Length: 186
Ligand code: GLN
Image 1 (cartoon, protein in one colour):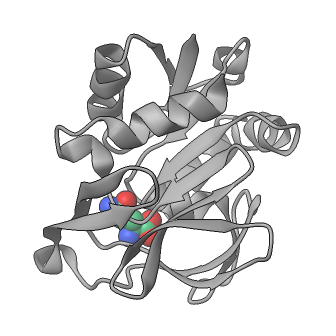
Image 2: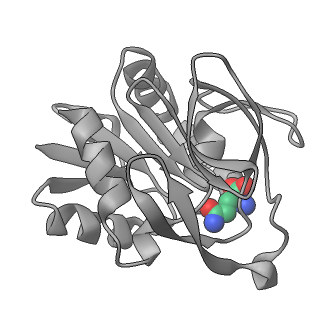
Image 3: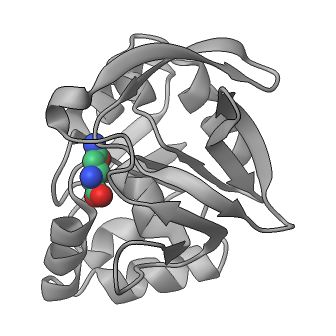
């Protein structure tokens, strides 16, 4: 099974490493032709606005958006969640807009406010999670399932085969969230 990792910016290598550990073939996605034959795609953390501008410049935003709308499974972490969200409460534009959630960008504060913690996830139990200038989910649509919370706050959601987390699971050494995503891709 080949899983793409959007490779315009952000922590691409870390995701590829986790996919490799799980026996999937990871493929960096930089150009439209890299989308062919993917079973799913990871949209890593980074800076959503910069990632979007690079994708638009390189002609990737449109074909990737179309693939997502046609049902390509995707997992967005942090900035990747922002890219997938239908609405961004504190930003004038939206990006792919395919998951029916509203997110607030940078809601956990600045880089120096980053923290590592444990969240409790449905079916997975306690999962280590790293939050870096993370988006928080401020509204969840009716077709969206909340899979993990930090206190009362939703931090991982699923809509069909689209998965998004506020946090970075690829920085923790725990591969269960990616394993869950791979099950959605099968
Ligand atoms: N603050 C970034 C954004 O809004 C996300 C940060 C991250 O991915 N660690 O795009």
